[in-house]
Length: 429
Image (cartoon, rainbow, N blue to C red):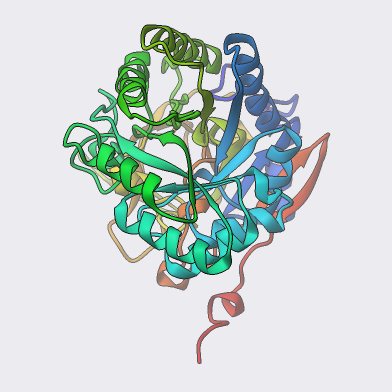
């Protein structure tokens, strides 16, 4: 049987496995809902990008893990051991990265509205880079850095006016009409660059863009690189770093065609090399920021089926003990997933269901999903849930968030413990 992730399999009992470990046994030990992640798959994904960059880009390069996809202390230990930097988008992600062992010099700070407290924390910590999203932020960074008597290493987040053709509009971040980025086409980017060069306490290192996610086609990146490198050539000041962001697509459904990391990196590296030659520029320090592609296929979420409601001629609702609170992606932008019954993984998927959550909303995890014959009490696994599930989880209806159990070398460990009702109410006065 072929799965959407290489870390999944089926054992002699006909049970789903992840990282070689029996999923029903893990569910019995740790309860449901439950995130299960394979550490080896995360490391494999990291190495796919670092090896491709080493092979295809002759200049200086970095791969930075995008924290927004999944942030908890152990993930930073793993990506740091795999020689990745990390980008963060809040003080909380920055704090967690440092707690997890990521050194300050390995951290890039993003975000369109960083608070005074967050900027001060980042500057005091002396992180690798702050990516400024506008002129007001540049002035704020300059003031705080000057007060602290330090120099902030800054890049400018630009909007090159490029979007992925198959990317949901809610996830297109490189277009003109976006809260992210300083537009190149309006002249605002050049004005911001000149401001950054005039302000005290700032050392301008380079430029950055992020185009959205997921991006399936190479042309989106090569078009953006053309715009970004043209800007570097005309900027009037040397810019040593080009950060082209992330957004690399992953396979969520069987048969879905996605490019391997090597093809994305090869095309990006080639486009940068050619643009550098065309504009008579030295090769910039190239940074890419895969997040989803590092963790998505390393995780499954396991639920227990509760009620089943069949409406003849309409649909069958199968409700589980999680939902919106641990995976809001279907409700946000119609994200699709593959599902399976872990205890009967080899059986044919002869039924079609609508997967519903437990919250007091008309919330779903997906519609028209093929599955094996299902009944109350069955375990049900949603595959490839490593990205934007735990990181976007909530306590809506005061539902505790699930734990994250990591698989490493045939053993399991709790990376994030299960929340309790006491945890949910802990801050109440």
